[in-house]
Amino acid sequence: MTQQGNSEILKVVNLKKYFRIGKDKRGPIYVRAVDGVSFNVKYGETLGLVGESGSGKSTIAYTVVGMYRPTSGQILFKNQNIGMEAVRRPLSLKKEIQIVFQDPGSSLNPRQTIEQILRLPLKLHTNTPKKQLKEKMIELLEKVELPADYLYKSPPSIGGGEKQMVAIARALAPNPSLIVLDEPTSALDVSVQAKIINKLMDLQKELNLTYLFITHDLSLMRNVANRIAIMYLGKICEVADAATFFEKPLHPYTQMLISSVPVVTEEEERLKPKKVVSIGEIPSPVNIPPGCSFHLRCPYKMPICSEVDPEMKEVAPEHIVRCHLFGKQASG
Image (tube, rainbow, N blue to C red; front, side, top):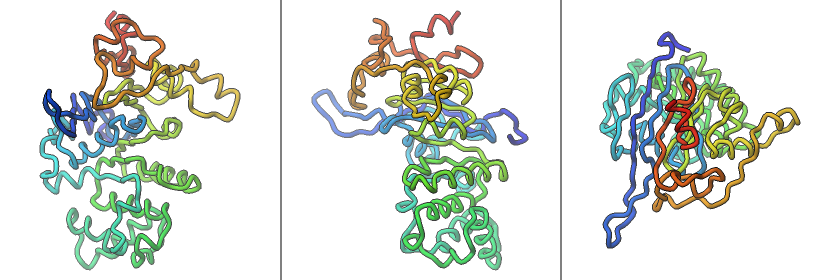
């Protein structure tokens, strides 16, 4: 943890991002990709944002880094509201927030050399003298354990894990404070995933980085994240520190996810929550049901669940849940 202690580097408040996909007799039709999400990221921590495909987690990532303009809500970075600036953010702000994409094969220009890929962010965001640019690029490669001669290679000539290491080096070039990791290992072979994760954790300690880690792999977050937030259909269901999250999950959807995580020992199996069986299908994000968006699949649903969308409630210090099962407990 950095000297800022537990203070927030990023705070997202009631963020909404809707995409118009057409219209009918009643008017425009929207996909509510992110629908009123609030969370914070503390200096020096890793917040894991976990959800199934289509939950809205990558939309949050792209909105935080400025690729999308929010429909409404606030994105506060170091207490500055940066949400509505989107693509027009000044370079001084863009250098502070970097992103590593899921597929390095598509995020790196195949027609450029690694030298050209690393040179651009150094020229844009740093005051590195021209004579020292190559030295700085070699230093970046060394940080991700790649040899200096990789400067003269192109992305198609190296492996997937090496491409992602180059993408990480590119993200490090401007000396950022926050890095958004958008499923950085899901497109890679299992054999190199652990190496990428270990390198990211080492770099975080070495450079005092803060990570917003987007993933669908809940088991990965057990050893990587300080805190975990679970998303479902554009909303956050539960937020807790990693230990509490796996030991005492409260939201039925969270329990369903954790109970389905594969384990290798009987002790791990005993620690898992009672299996929660989903009883329906995921609704369309174009036609989200009223009330709690999970109620069609929830075995514990009550009449209020189909009528009133629950609010986020803090049921224990820094353990927040959006579920009517805990409404009375939280308010009492």
